[in-house]
Structure formats: structure tokens, C-alpha cells
Image (cartoon, rainbow, N blue to C red):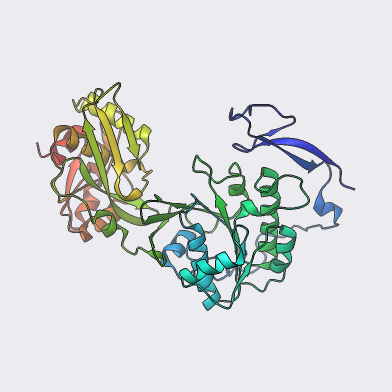
Length: 453
């Protein structure tokens, strides 16, 4: 008989504590410890069942990789690295109402229509509710099987049969195991159920998608525990009041983690955006200060986005800094560089920076575009409409090279831009694309070009 003992796990950071305390010693969060029962040290389920594995040479076996399954959405396949891998376990997270269930239902419908039976497990909706949503999205199909169940012991037999092309669990927080006394959604239940789905996916060779909720901090609930268990982690991002949605891979054992897919939420479901650059620049104002076009790189894909800045006099109290879409720490660095080396004063002004369209840019290549937008707004001098900007800015005011300059310039040329403000070391690659390079060694030289002083 397996003996159980209690321990306490923090829901925010996953730290294990031997006894309950009011505050987690690791993340210092209050009232986040939850009790769970585990088997005592030395007891192992596989050993107790008599299951043993033998090591094999890494060179043995077939060199052919399993064919990927197409989702029917090129943007979705791009993020996964070319399609769905049989036997993989994928976690899809996002804010409530962002469109996770809609995306999974459209994916299930395509595979049911073109590949085989699909099992859609709904733990939060009744059969009638799920059927009504499928009818609204026009995703009804006789090979799309619906199961409303939350007990993993009742779900497992269906997956063990291995007669499905895909399985979707919506959501993993609603599934529980009776082997644990904890409530569904707790750390212990998430770990136990996710491990069981991983075993089922590998043994039955069925790709399994887990839909996961996110916390108020924007991370998948379950202290990022599930991210370590699954093969792929996808975040579905976007503003609830806007139609644009971005699917981003933050972990992928079968492809790049820098790719994104762009979708637009419409009345009939999600629609792929095949030319995101055109969408992001569609409403860009011309001849307005504080607006700069930046060619961002998401994996191997260049995207043109609009970086906006507004510098104004403070109305009350200390000056405000509101940053959306870029790293606030990088903006603080750029403000210091512009004051020290550019002779511009921001310390007594409100500063607002935004990337239009809800896109988030993490790469340092956006530095020069942000700096140009800030200087443009402060001096009320528009950046020329024919000029795109990219480059990294150092603490000494130097402009540093960034990667993929040739791909960025090619995307810029497609949309009618004729000039590109770039680091001097990238000017040769830019010239080869037909764009006129405007090289700059320092932030002062860059601002002279951007503001045409």
C-alpha cells in the first residue's frame, strides 16, 4: 500500500514547503500555499507496476520523421514549425475570452474533415452549449466527437484506444484525478493530469492540445509548472476590445520559438491575416510627429509596425512613464541616452510609448525607432513618410548593428519606402535590396537624418 504524506506548494512560483506558512519564502506571496498529498520517498508507481525500460543506442531506429498534420491555417502551422506532430502535447494559454476555444474548435473541425476523428473534451460547457458555439462558427462535423467530462479516469480510456487524429482538453484546470484530494486546478491536480495526458499522447501517438487559463500577471495558471511538462507552449495574445490576435510560441521542441501567427476575430470565428504589415500600417497617420515605422523580425518573418511616442507637459505631480509593446527598461535607457548624448530634456515631461496594433516587440533593434519617435514628438518634427528605422542604441550613444538587415529592408521596399535609417555596419546589406541607406554611427547622426535638421 502506498503511504501518503502532506506538503504545501505555492500556486504562484511552485516552491514546495514542508509545512504551511502565511507567506511563500521564495516569491513572498501571501496565502498562496496549497496542501497536496504525495507518495512517500522511495515509492515509485512504475516500479510498483513492474514496468522497466532498457537503454538503446541513439543511432538505432528510423531516421524518418513523422509527417506533420496540417491545421488548415498557415499562420497556425507556422507557429508550430510546419504543422502538428503526432504524439505531441501542446499547451495553449491566453486571457479569458481571447479566442482559445474558438481556435481549438476551428482546428478540430479541419482535422475531422480531412484527417480522422477528433475528440473534443469540454470540461466547462455542456454538450448543448458546445454544439451551439460550433453551429455559430460553422464547425459542425460528424467526425468531431464531443465529450463533456472532467474526471481523467473517464477521459483516459477514449485516448487509449488510439482512434483519434487529435484530442483537445478544454480546459486542463477543470480536469481532476480522484487519486488526489486537492481541488481541480490546484498544483497537484495540474501536475497529475498533465503527466497522464503526456503519457497518453506518447503511447497512443495522438497529438493532444491542452487549453490553459492565465493568471492576473498574464502567465499560465499553475506556477508555470505545465510549461516544463509539455512539448509546445503557445500564448494567444491580444486586446479583448480589438479584433487582432497574435499566437506566439514560447516553447517548441519541434521548431522555432520566435514565430508568431496573426489572426483577426470576426463574427464567424478567427481569420488568418496573411499580410500583417499592411494591417498594422493601414491607419498610420502621415506627417504627424512621434510616428516611426520599424521593420521587426519575428523568427524568420519581417513585420512592419508603427512605433508611436507622445511627450507632453505633466499636469500634476511627477512626470509619468507609460510604455506599451516594448520593454519599459529599454525606454528608460533610451531617455537617459537622449538626454546625455542628444541634448534633449525628458526628465520633466510625461512620456508615452506604444506599438500600434497590440504587437509586442522584444528585440533591441527597436531602440533607434523608439528614440526617433521620442525626439520627433518632443521637437514636434515629423519623421519623413518614406523613411523606416531600425538599430540598437548603446549607452555611449553609439548605434549598433542588428541581425537580418537584408530581410528587413526587403519588407520595407514592398510597401513603398525608399530610405532606411540604419547602423553604418548594415548599410551595405541595405543597399543591395534597392533601398537607399541612411547610415548612422551615433544617436546624434541618426536624429539629424530622422528629423532632417
